[in-house]
Length: 383
Length: 128
Image (tube, rainbow over all chains, first blue to last red; front, side, top):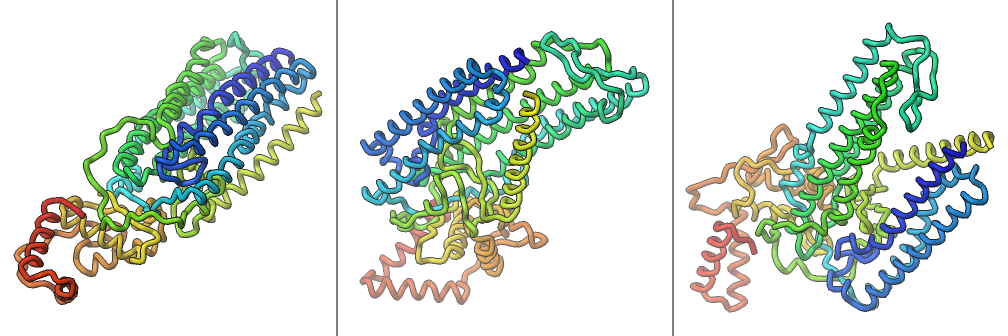
């Protein structure tokens, strides 16, 4: 138990340090057209008011991160058996810190926009070629998912082929030295659990890849052609990163499946660790380096001005800011899009006016609550 | 081709969209037989109602600028050549344009010159 507590504690510390480093830089990864989720002219970012707002946000997130880190250490020293609960609930503390910093910044940005006249023309853009290729997913790097599916099929085929020859007890868990430390009675459910988990994981990763391709990303209304070129590069990089991670995880579960059906076979721990962790590094690097929807990427946009008459681009005070809560929650009944890039940070969010999104969000929240209640009672009983 | 829509303009969105696509076809930025995105995908990218895009596509289809393949995919129609007469609708629009030019004091030769320059500019790939 103490070994597990130490492992969870180290994991918590890693999450805290990573989030503590990432949260304060989020405003600098966001497109210049947005200030804490409020649409503003890019020049507004250079004003003293905007800089002060960013300094305030950094201070809140930095202090919040430091308090969270201290709380983690205090909890482990004072009550190490409760580390599992900290691991479960710590992500909510991170979300709370970000919201505590974002909510007042967003409100203040709206006030500044109104007071200083940071009005922006309510223009919306689309690129016909991008819309077409995203519609039929033709630009998605499918070969990664085909390789992953082949690995899933291989894990099923090998498990089924080996099943008759397996002993009555099969290993189901391994220690850091990769020696089995848990066994269960042989059954189809036990032997196929790794392949089934592999298939579910590949399906989930494939859906994430589709989400990256389908999501509508925010653009800069002053330089739409550059924005669309950045979106294209961003989708390509993230698509390949996600595909590579999928193949690596499918290979990892194939290895775990092989360890179950070939008693005595054990892959080296470094290989398991490498397959699980290394592919995440380029993906995280791209997400940070590219910024929101690729806003920090260097691209050469097509020399093409947007069509339409020039007099359309007049600024006005009317804004679609009201469609966004905190720049994170989008609700536009007129917009048929399901997936949209958030206005704050680089994450992809949803259009909560769509019925399937509402149903999906309800199912997600209910299943999360049920899982947390169940796990909390389970671990509390083990104390 | 980039499409630009002003969601708060007095001009209806479907008309702006129709004009954008028409300019794209005339300037060659949308090539003959090029597939346009589905109405749903284009509406999602522009953040406008699906029926608005459908209405613009329908107007372009009626005028013969695009054709609908099995009612799902919009394709840029082959460009007509050798026409020497304006359609009734287009002649009416040009008459109105000429009337405004006359009222604004633009003389005949200047008006003709502006018309020819505008024609050449769009055909050469430029869009105002």
